Image 1 (tube, helix red, strand yellow):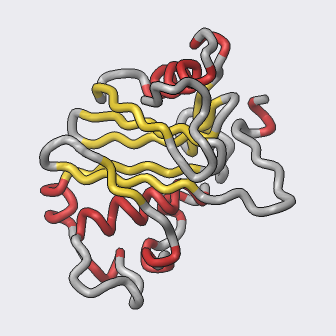
Image 2 (image 1 turned 90 degrees about the horizontal axis):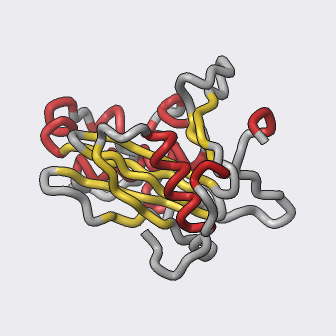
Length: 179
């Protein structure tokens, strides 16, 4: 996590790693609270499904920041930013076992792109956009996004992307129903 205190600057995400067994909402709340310098109890976090409105699944949110999370293997990773952020971790063996380039790669993606990297990068992009896997990975061109590779646990690949806030658009971290 950031050692400087405060939310990261524009275009930057603060990353924290947790054991997968940790409650994801609690991990998000604690991560945001640490950056804001407030008690974790003052930060609310949860999920909201854009399709059905359920708070049992869907896109993660937290008061005070944009957030994302991902789980794979024994690991949970959280990302916090001042604009939409997406993070993904994948176990290399799991992606290789189900890899189908026709379901993941855009025709303009670089030939020979590493499968797990492409999967993690595209899932991070779709999370940042707020669509998740409701949108086909093949619609995403890797070259259109500044995706960063994270130092991930052995046998895994992780990626993060922070989307710029468009001029004239007010950035909002928590869904209106949760503010």
